[in-house]
Image 1 (cartoon, rainbow, N blue to C red):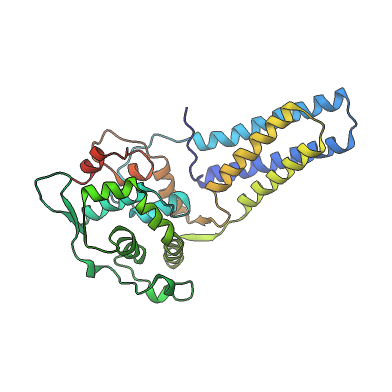
Image 2 (cartoon, one colour):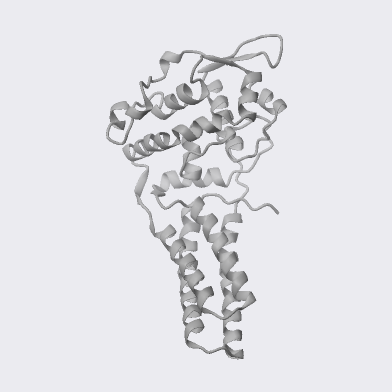
Length: 313
């Protein structure tokens, strides 16, 4: 079974906070047992028993990432792909899925079109009107101090930046053949990584402006970091115990993965936004044959030449 780690919804995050507090308390107990008790059978039994409880608690946290319902909904008109990507991951990460989802979205809005040529791979994707997107003189001029000066609602500033600096940086059209080559050579991934920081800043500005955030939330990742530190010190001060070693390794790996998914600077969204994010994360492919941008963003779209052409038909 393939385990997929995704952003925890608010209910599951609160559950995991409680389990983490218990886990930290248990590790503190293990820490003092390791320091105060001399090597003995009692010490081995105590550490082994508590370590097993430690592993059980870690499994309970892991199950919350696997507890996804089969909620089937159509998200074609949910959010634009860039904002959806940010809501899912709390970041804009370099990946070809985002490129394809944005192309699908722009096609639907008639902001790009496919030229009708005879050859499939020779067909060109054309930007309908570059002037409808905001112009950026230099990316260095966009910073936290002057984002408000650049910010516009329609089309979104981050979409304009994405289209003019990542999708069509130097031309207004591209052949499907060249698009596929660019995807295979990670050309777009490199460009996303180049502009991801400013994209995130503009999106955060939009979220703050529209009151999508409740407040900045740092407690959850802080608990994870504390848990990792205490687990390491507990393993150091305790006598060699294979069950404790397994529990510690499992703890550190799982905590690190969770920390990556639940970034330190993540935010608590409003209840309305949280509900929509949960709908995305609970989404499962329906019987609808139409290619959905959410399917692409959730890695449910296989990237190959045939599927890319089907996507752009």
